Length: 323
Image 1 (cartoon, rainbow, N blue to C red):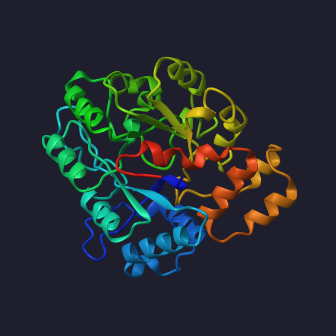
Image 2 (image 1 turned 90 degrees about the vertical axis):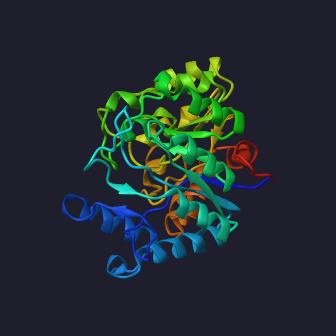
């Protein structure tokens, strides 16, 4: 079975007419610099063809890693429930056509589209994605301002269910992308798509990102007893607060529904797993030195005790992907 990282972000400035944009600089500048340094981009990447440099580096890392493929994610803009784009909201945008094109060019890339279901053209955009190889659809309900339980979106979820297109939805706290409605971090906002039959992946397993975020892990576990089509991923588990949930996520019912995801380019450090006693010091030192952060994340999670099925489960869940 293919080993897949099911949660990898594409970002871009629009260099090379990719259609991407970022709100960079200001208070975001130190984090941007740190992420670029973390994944091995040159210091002057933003002054050059950033989008091409980023994709080339990501492709190189996938190819020399233990992974067979990575799901690369588009990022839609923010809309209100009436389908009006909210000016000034959101911190970056990645068009669906860009990730669909990259997926056609490189077999290591599996394209994940992003469509706010309130968009006037949402159904047309969904059909376009299905026709061009989308393997899942990604949303951050709390950041995209999507109450997935809004009945106006039911036909959208029903079409996804019919096509067996999974929904990868952010759950739990968020401190990298601006939050529009914090209450939509609750996994219960995913009830309607689940009832419609959509395979849903709760990104980050509804864990806390910040110290004072609500912890929805109990809610997620309870929902898994009711919805056999509900899954979770272990993306961003190599950061300080989310790492507190790792032991619980290696146990039932979560581990039987868990997928591997890195949340690249979010920082990946083994310190937290070591300090929590999840890996020994020798393992920490060995993999913390690994410059390929996709491989580092993969090997750290293997060492933490996530079983083989976690790394191959996506191959049987993603649309159009075979083992």
